[in-house]
Length: 452
Image (cartoon, rainbow, N blue to C red; front, top):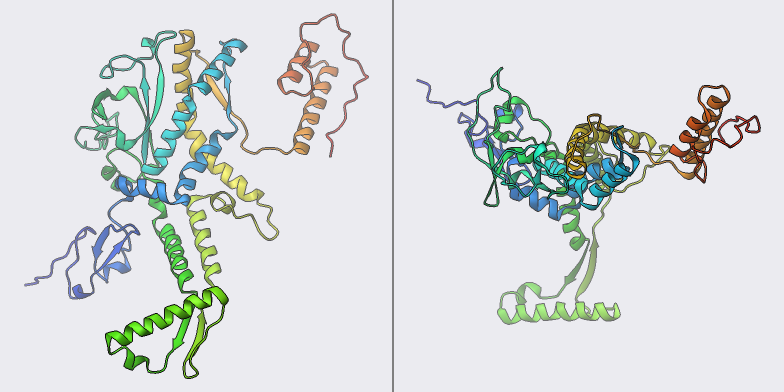
């Protein structure tokens, strides 16, 4: 009869003939699963998820600058250059009013906060405050023109829900793993879930998803190994700084003196006096039979190790070293390729996912300001890459020459030419598109090539 107990779960210890070698594979923050030494050859993984530890993530965000950077930087960069509101149903004055409203009332700021908490905790949301009963279903038509409206960014732990875990179904419309129910408890106030714009973090595989209760994963989940190495190296350097230089006193009769309390006190007093004198006049007076030496520790190789660890952290996050650690590119690389890859990550992971979230917030603001929502409301992100002065002038010259060529060939008329010039700010002053009495543009303008 075999009395050995086996299990396929990593959350329970595996008892076998090698159970004396059982070891714990934990994340750097103290949680993990016990697995046998043999199983560790195949399973060197954590079972407990960092995403489910609110206290841990909050404390790390507050204490470690690298965590703040990896959470905040991509979101801030995604919105740094802004966007243009696209619609034909609003007049220019109304567009200016809408832009002023979202800026003054921090509408996009609330979205940015929610996106940051979604990256840190795996979930966030935007609470829509309208002055109505929070337990009622939210309908955009219920917002009155000029009525009360505010937005507040929340993290997933502020939206305490109720409900049971469902079973995956082909016919399920909602997330079968969502345990939030139909209402959230927001610091004692019951809020209908339709009044919270839910934002999820990175989607987890189906095997993991149930443990996340309908939310996504924290960005730190994929960094456990690399950030563990980073922090461990930082701690080693912190400890070695105090040990970098050690004074060694060789005192005659030291062992004999340490046998009595009086002798020990005399030795301590002797060393303290020597250190005090050395601190003031950089000299030590000793007995001829005593000796003094100073040991210095070498830090050779630690810089290379730290560099490799930083590269691993940056690789896991798909962020360049210049963004994450402020380290410029070295060698023959100008850093353009790194920034291009980073911008692609921001476009795909932040901008693409938040585009319709921005549009939904703009729709609510339009209903609040004008009493209706434009059917063609959309946005166009401004480029992430910022041009320097020379590159910007080259682009303007190219646009101006192309515009002039189109006018001289008859493809556009003078009014369209003027509108294009004003739209792209190609001249220092705006061209009056209504002055039809002006002489038409003639050949005195020469179509050239952009300045090189």
